[in-house]
Image 1 (cartoon, rainbow, N blue to C red):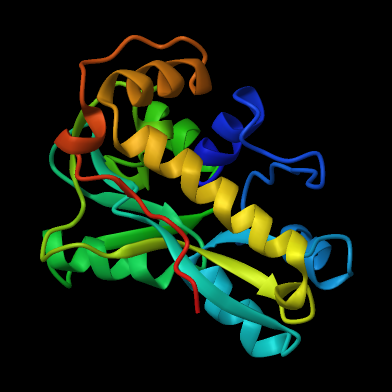
Image 2: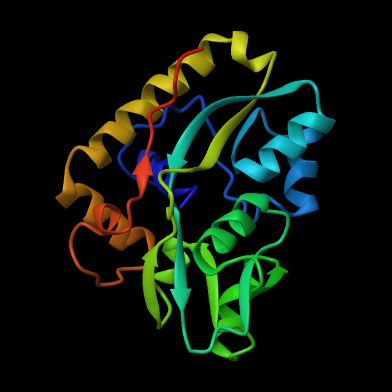
Length: 219
C-alpha cells in the first residue's frame, strides 16, 4: 500500500517533474535501506519498524510524518491456526498478531514476498499482510486494528533535503493526491483497481478494512 499514492500522483500528474519515484518491494530488506543511506534517495516511505531502525543508525535522516494507518489486514486461510506469518523485522506486526490471537501462537517471520507463497502452500494458516497483497489471495480478510488505529507507514527524509523548496512542493502535491483519494470513494476504488492490475472488489474497501491514507504533517 506504500506506493499507492505515489502511483496515483504519477498517473494523474500530481507529481512534479522535479521528482523521480523508485518503487521498492520491501523496505525491511537490507538492499532497500542501503539505497536510502547511499545518497541515491532523498526520502522514502517506509514501514514504521524499518524507519525507526533506519534513522537510529543513520542520523542524517529523520522520520518526518506518518502517511498511512491500518494498511495491514489478517488473512486466514485455514483452521487450526498452527503458524501465522508476518514480514520479518516488523515488530508492530508481531504486536498485532499477539493482540488478536494471543501470546502463545507460533509466529513465522519471513520476507514479505514469501508470505503469499507460504499461504498458498499451506505452510501458514494465516498472516498479517499488506491489504493490497491480501486482496489478490483467497481467504478471509479482517482488519488488523484490533485495539484502535496504528501507524503503518511513515515518510523518512534526509535532514538537508528538508530545507529545500522542492521538498515543500512535494509535500503539497502528495497531500493534494491523498485528499483526492480519501475524499472520493469512486476515485479511490478505480485507482486501487488499476494499481492491483484491474482486480475486481467490493466498493469502499478502505472503509471496510479501516485503511487510512494521511496527509503529510508540516513540522
